[in-house]
Image (cartoon, rainbow, N blue to C red; front, top):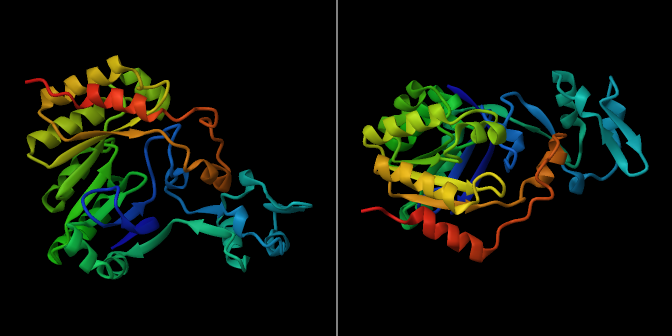
Length: 295
């Protein structure tokens, strides 16, 4: 059993309890404007360029057969519209500095488990474990299921971070081997959700309801995006929906631009460059609204 993985991050403390290893699976049905992992969106392997690593040897230019990469006084220029083919992706192999990389490779469950096992003592001491993220990990439900089962068999706690925008059957497959669902809930308004992410929220809310009915352990996380859901009235509507579902574990995640450089590395336009991060005071105000419980 192989899955399409684009990164494995060890010693994470933000994606579940304790110290965790996060496995990032490639492919996502959403196109959130603020996405911090644009390299996760496509399900296909893709070229990724790290300018800071480039030593300007121009080996990649010499290896380009169809003008994918050309030379300039500042170094290589990547023509992204020509870089989708298998031949173009192979250009990463000629870079001696790893400035050109391939994001996304097929690896087995056992290969991932070999990485996970290195940190077993950290999981045991901190109450941590393994988190599947993405992208949307449940676009690869069979690989996710086998990986989560392997963790469970070795006594390693599991979590899945999901957009919820997958068929319910994909979620049902991994229910028995998932200790925690980190569930995204971005907007109570279906059309606003569509305009910012490319899809509406109907399936997301339906799956959230079914997941709660199934008795799953759910923590809802909402990224606060200026212009989309950063008004108290919007978050109050979302809190009411969660109250009605009986979901009390919830948190707000502040908007940031940490992943903006990755857009350049993938040749993808970034539309949030002029959006400012909310102040701590503003986030505290919004938290009071979102976390308030109706008795």
